[in-house]
Amino acid sequence: MFTLLLGHRPLYRSGQRKAGRLFTPAVTAAFIVLLVILLACIFAPLLAPYDPNAGDLSNTLAMPSAGHPFGTDQNGRDLFSRILYGGRTALTSALGVVAISMILGIPLGLTSGYRGGLFDTLTMRCCDILLSFPSLLLAFIFVAGLGRNTYNAVLALGIVYVPMLTRLTRSLTLVEKNKVYVSACVSLGYSEPRIIYRHILPNCISTILVQLTLDVGYALLDLAALSFLGLGTRPPQADWGSMLDEGRAVLLLNAFLSLIPGLIIVVVVVALNLFSDGLHQYLDPSQTDLPSFDAYERKLRKYYAVKEARDGNQSA
Image (tube, rainbow, N blue to C red):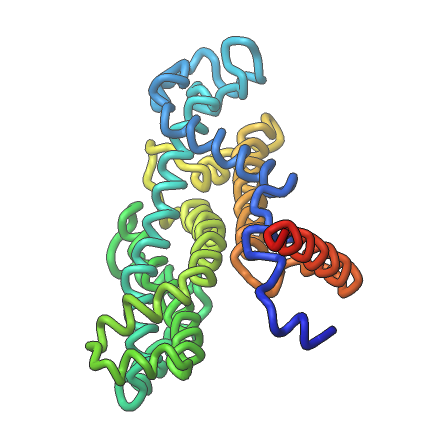
């Protein structure tokens, strides 16, 4: 029976895998939540009922109502409008952090892992130095040196995230470069950039993509921490992290000022983690739900029965 199994084409193809389904209920819910929040932030000018920076001192610290769904802050600004505009700042900044780490980290990791030698040693020692500092502390140092604003916070965190992605990409490249297809490419005379970017990178991209999805959530948290400490977005620009800091001063008077932006950050990060986990299960072949041996044997018997019947009809 094992000879039959090994000697014929498989009956279960990659398109028939069970556990590798991307949109499971949890992933679907996470995707819908992310899509709704993303679209709400993109169309903030259409959905926001008020100017996020327009204050009304006669209506400060108002509780949620029909006119102000989330209430108002200590300056009379509509909290719902600021949440929508703050999401644009927070999400675009998080994507900017991941983009910087991707642009620098992936080429460094691929080249370092494939070439080895002195270049690999120097790259890894630089990564070790950066990773020896706590990420937020290193971001504080960069922001303090560059100046306090959103762009410098994004640049600082992007640099902090580079060594983590570089080490991940390098480890994947070390595994791939010892495989047969790379040796075949070398024997055919392919150039190093072609081998790295057209052959090795596509085989590493699934794991890198999962890590980048997780990094968006981590970047969102780190940017909120910087803004909360006064090192990120400068007022009056709306941002979820700075809104947490603003609400902290009046927490006993109106808890919604800190509760709502904090809850949205938690929801977005949890949804990103759920989506990343589903993406990992979908892209990782080891997560495929293979059939049991009995099920495979029944499928095999049915296959040969149909084949014998077809051959009999053709001979007749």
